[in-house]
Image (cartoon, rainbow, N blue to C red):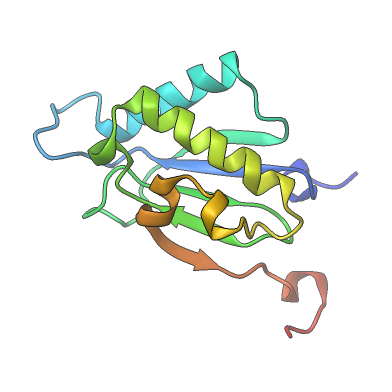
Length: 139
């Protein structure tokens, strides 16, 4: 049985728990508040196939809060500036709406105009799918 993390209709959203916005209190950090808001919003409005987890650090400290999404055969994205742009609850709704579109694509490439504005402005990196792990030759 294949690992669920590599199923084509699944994705993992990693939320940086180390992220701290300017003026942030010591605890809970902004990243932890965003993770809690994402989990609460996913309870209210589930995104089938999406796993949400915390990550110790995504090394994008100048652009808190940072999240990354990865899925087999799809592009991986890293986005930042969520807590700086909006409150955690609004950010959670924005992120989950964008990830619904991401999961609807075969390759993770959502047309530019169909991406939430926060995804267009907050993109830190776009990483191609790993084809070598499946024995394929990159194009």
